Image 1 (cartoon, rainbow, N blue to C red):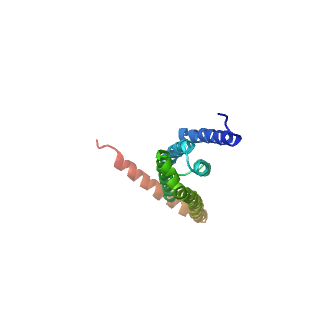
Image 2 (image 1 turned 90 degrees about the horizontal axis):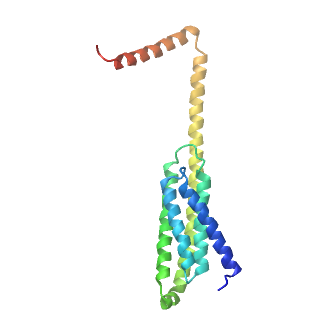
Image 3 (image 1 turned 45 degrees about the vertical axis):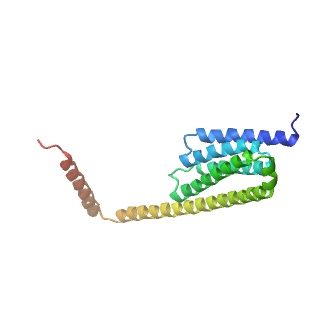
Length: 200
């Protein structure tokens, strides 16, 4: 049986998504919650292709999930500090949503003909709800990330101001005051060193 153009495009899109997801999973920069989310989405992609009812909706949810993971990866892969806890929690929440979708797809595949007919409207509503939840989760992640970046910027700026104030204070000292400060610092260093020396 020949595949339609739409089917080929979907299959090609899924293949490209799998390549991208596998690359994220293999990356040493990806942190555990994201890798776990990737694993769930890979399964979601596979299950969506096996769905016999609401297939377009399932494929849309699968593609949206894959895109969401890639968006998170793009926004976090170059983070030069540890990800804030709030951002990690947001990703963990998304991971749980992916696993919920995975379970739903597994149940869809198990349905027989009569169950598919009886539950078609309910399943469609659930798929629409998952679409809404994915959009909501991504929005929450983006806002959380932006707030965290802003907070880090403020903390960095405050630290810079403190360093500048310290340098300025030292620059205003007289030569004798600087010498006294250096002597105190050196004295503390020698005291610490002396306490670390073994007893003879």
